[in-house]
Image (cartoon, rainbow, N blue to C red; front, side, top):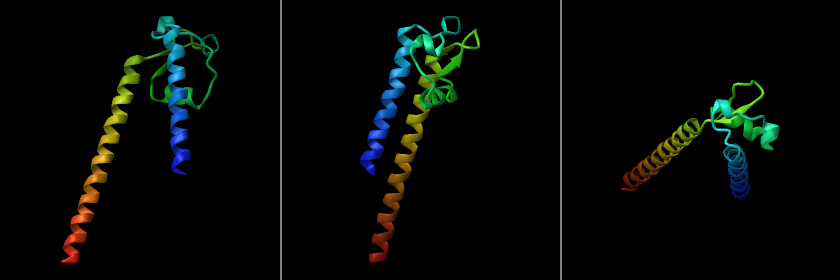
Length: 107
């Protein structure tokens, strides 16, 4: 199971990288330089939907076009890293608390 989750995460990260690269290579990084997904060689997918949900991919000046908002993407990444750090710290504190509790009970 853990291996499947790791593979799934790696595939998802690769899919995100591929979509972001397509936008960057086409210079579709501003509303006026937006392109259609077809022009970018990108198919509608869960990855594209997820990037749209977090604001990294936005509509261009033409409703059928999209562009990569690099600032929004970086903000999303920083936010995700911050959440991961908080979860890791909370897990560490919980583990420490359980160890201290077990030591006190064992006395």
